Each structure stands twice: as structure tokens, then as C-alpha cells.
Image 1 (cartoon, helix red, strand yellow):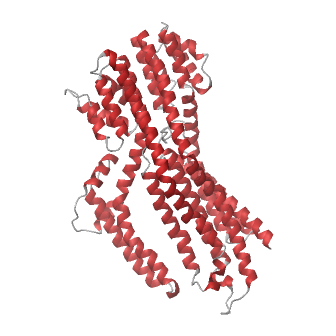
Image 2 (spheres, rainbow, N blue to C red):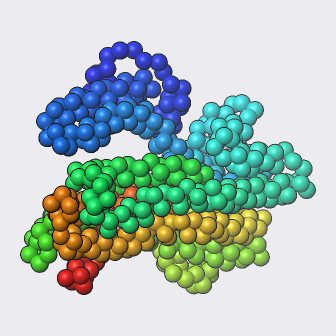
Image 3 (cartoon, rainbow, N blue to C red):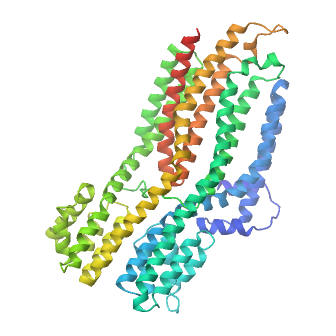
Length: 570
């Protein structure tokens, strides 16, 4: 509806863009590129009209900086809307490709039991979740009745975005036609191709982003924070700096530059490993929007009133906004994060469970019996899940698949593709018998390797993301609060300059504090978002939860640092 209204402001014909159309097709949006381009042009016209009106109304002294910002928005708005589908699709593909090692591993394991590419592709698609598994399933369905299994066409579609996935899936398809003596070696090469390729691409990515991330950190964070202390003395050097320019630079220009740099970093990541997909429809995620809104408003109002009583009046706006937004984000996302924590706990010992079951199946024990015996040896939430499945199987006389994956199965409330694919292999092993024991043991080894790849990827990024997170939540607010207090002290103690105007008159305390405080809150949101995006992809729930925590921390530390530094300089 919004795009249609914006497009109606630009009735002229535009040319289609194949790149935008391809991105919209991946996102499954029911519009085409001409709609997006016309909407961008219409938004540009709207922003231009607003810029003209606002520029005419503002005082002459601040007309130039305000007009510059608004008319820059006229140029950047159409460009942003036009490129938004491409950027969103690129981020979604990055998140989808995090499942590439899993999907190859499932196809390889299915091939070890039944060496047909069709069965392997069907199993890998059916036991997965997300765009990559859905894409493979679409290729398999389109290949029905043809000589092709869908594996090669799937590999060709994703070749540009992930060459290791293309090579691995081609090897899986080749293994179905290889002699039995060569099949195992070909499948091992397929798995090695995706795992080694993922490691190499992530290592290259970390090396490529070090310099851009350092530059963004230096010019977008360190330098602006350092300049705060010298701003009151700017008039002494004859620099014409006004309060409105301070607000424009710190609360619009710098955040915009950080957002652009963050988008570049996130969109250049080759793969991401997103957390389990837990939606609002999950039974353990309550619908408590009104409660969260009420509690967040209470927290924000209390902070607004309380801070205004004990500190400078301008601090209440920072405290109220930070507490309101922070508690709102944390409260809205915490139930989903708790479910994800439980899912991770269930996944933690899945490899041990597969090893214990697979070893007994290989020795000749039936899968059902092997699961019962192994349950006593499995620890943590994984053991609880297996115990529940055993109880369902015993009391309701259900099979392995139904006891784990049925409507009321042990995994019915655990949206974990990795755990579900492991259980699906166990159910398949129950049908195949002893020969499948080796495949179960292989899957345990493969899951260990997949988890190791994820750990290595996050370890490679730890230095960059750790610096961003700590700056957003701790160091940035700490330096900013202390520097604002020192700058105010400098303004009050310096007196007058040759023109007869005080240094503090150029930067009133409330303007300086609000401008820098707003910058601190924006910094907490932007840097935390890019840190989460680099580690896990732009998952909305995780971004909201981490940003909420960071804003709360930044608010408290900024005000504490301002208070303590002001006390020391008094």
C-alpha cells in the first residue's frame, strides 16, 4: 500500500531493472521493479516538497545546514528505495547459505544409505527449513518425470552466491553414478568441499573487513567522541560552529555514515549462521504486547521524572528515551530468546546421542532398543527430549518418527532443523536396520564438524564484533558522558573571548548534552546491529534483544559517567 501511494506520485513510465526483479522474486514480493523505481521517485518528490517548506519556515541562521540535510535526503531517498530490495535479498541469501553445510551433510548421509540422488535431495529438502531447503525442494519437484534429479539445477542456481555449495552438490550427484568402491570417497569429498569452502570464505571475509571496520570505527566513533571535548573552544580558533550544526552532524550525518558502513559490512559477508527460527506463533511465546508496552512506558516515565529531579533537566530526555526503547525491545523479544536458548540446549548433545545410538545399531541392536538404552547416558536437555520420546513411544505405541516429530512428539515445540534431521535419520535407520548404523555414526561426526565450522567462523569475527559491542554498550557511553561533563566545565570556567561572547554561549549545556546523548543511543543501536549481523545475520529477534540491552547499558553508563565527571570537575 505504501509503495503504491508513493508510486502514484510519479505517473511517468520507467524502465524495468532485471537485478531488482530477481531480488523481488527471491523475496517473494508481489511487485516488480517498475513499482519500486516509481515509488522511489515519488518518495524523492515528496521529500523535496517537504524540504522546500521546512527551509522556508526555519530561521535564516540555521537555514543552510537544514536545507543541506533535507535536500541531501531528496537525492538519497530514491536511491535507497531502489537498492533496498537488492540489499535485503542479499542479506536473506547470506542467512540462507548458513544452512549450506547442513543441507549437504543430510544429502551425503542419505546417499550412504540409498545411493540415489533423488532420494538424497528429497531427504535434504524435507528435513530442512528455510529458503535453501525450499529451493532444493522446488528443484526436486520440477525434476519429477525427467532424467535430472534436481540436484544439478539447484547447484547451478546457487553457484554465483556460493561456489563451494555448487561443487559439493555436483559431487553428490556424481556419487549416485559412481562405482560402489568410489562412492564413499566422492561423498567425503563433497562434504569436505562445503566445509573447507565455508572456512576459507569466512577467513577471507574477516581479512577483507578489518581495514574497513577499523576505518569506520575510527572516523565514526573515536574521532567524534574526541572532538566533543574541544567543541566549546571552537570559537576561540574562529571555527563557526552552531548548535544546530552540532545536532545535524552528531545525530544525522554521523549515524547515516555508520549505517552505510554497516550495510556494506553485512552485505559482504559470504554466509551467516542464524539462530533457530522461532516465530510469534510458537506456543511458548506469549502474546503480551500490552503488558510489555505498559511496563516499558512505566520504566521510561519513571526514568524521565526521577533523572530530572537529581540531574540536569536535559538528562531526563536521554534517560526516558533510553529506558522506554530498551525495555520495550528486551520485553518484546525475551520470550523468543528463551525458547531459542532451550533449542540450543536440546541441540548441544545431539551428536553424543547419535554416536551412542549408532554404535549399538552397528553392533546389531534394533534402533528402538538402542534409543531406550542410550537415553540413560544422554545428559542435559537432549536427554530430557529422548526420555520424553521414549515415554510417548511406550505409552502410545508410536514409532520413532511419530514419537519425536509427531503433533505431540518430543520435538513438536523445538524448531531445530538439525535435531529434526538427526531424528529423521534415526527413523530411516529403523527401517533399514544394521547397515544404517554406520550412517548414524557418520552423521554424529558430521554434526561435530558443522558445529566446529560455526565456532571457527564466530571466533574469526570475535575481535571485530567484540570491539563493536563493547564500544556500543560501555566504552562509547563512558567516554561521551565524561567528555560532555568536561566540556561543560570548560565552557563555564573559560570566561569570555575577544568578541565578548562566552565560549559556552555557542554550545548551551542542554544542546550539547542532548546532541551527544542522542548520538550515544544511536551508536548503541547501530554498532550492536552490525555486530549481530556479522555473527548471526540480521535476525530481527536477536537484533532487537541485543540492541535493547545495549541501549539500557549505554543510557545508564552515559548518565553515571556524566555525573561522576561533573562531580570531579566541580
